Length: 265
Image 1 (cartoon, rainbow, N blue to C red):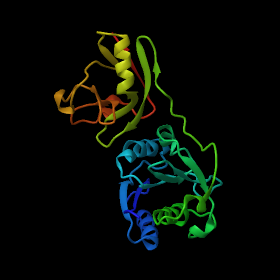
Image 2: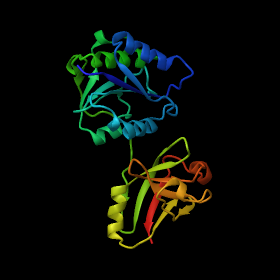
Image 3: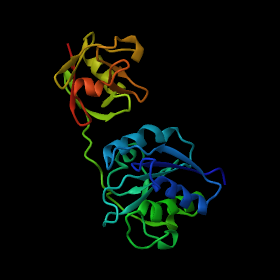
Image 4: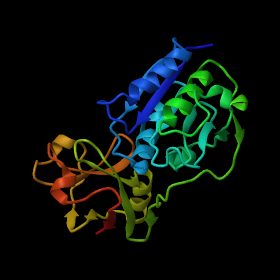
């Protein structure tokens, strides 16, 4: 069996004992496992942000990586705990929609975690990431078959994440995510924009974001002046609104969920 990787994504921060507890449980079961921290600074309870972060990075991990996502506003409630298995990866998370973007990209088998012998505690608790999800991730990394850990389920909860709407002269989209630099990532993909430009050959692009009109498309962050907002196709192939060395989100008064319109002029 090859080297095992478990990647952690939480909203726990790093000042408390929560992340250390997850790692302790995993290493107590599989001391040879490599644990990777994706991010522990997801805004508290922000399922859409967590879903985006997971989607943005999971494809770059080695095949066989187990992704443990613990952003769980419903901890201790009746919501299910899921194990989703695709051809290359495994995902363990609450059934609260945090895997929505993964489900769009992958077609995994989905199980509800129900085998209590692989939990630290059978009862519901305020820390099911430690007591149930982390030990399951560890046992899975040791080669325990997924069929021993849960039972197949259908219809996992999915977040409402609107798709862009392509019209004749405009694309209606939405801001998905604000990164730590204040850049605003939208759901307008490079492929959709290329399709739009083909329909509107020779047109200039104008981005309407809130009360701001942005007409400059930059090839790199540093190629624009520091006081002029611009848009760029980022490393994920998504349209992003930015300001050079300044937080576009604060300067423009925009945030995730706000609409954007890309027009042909």
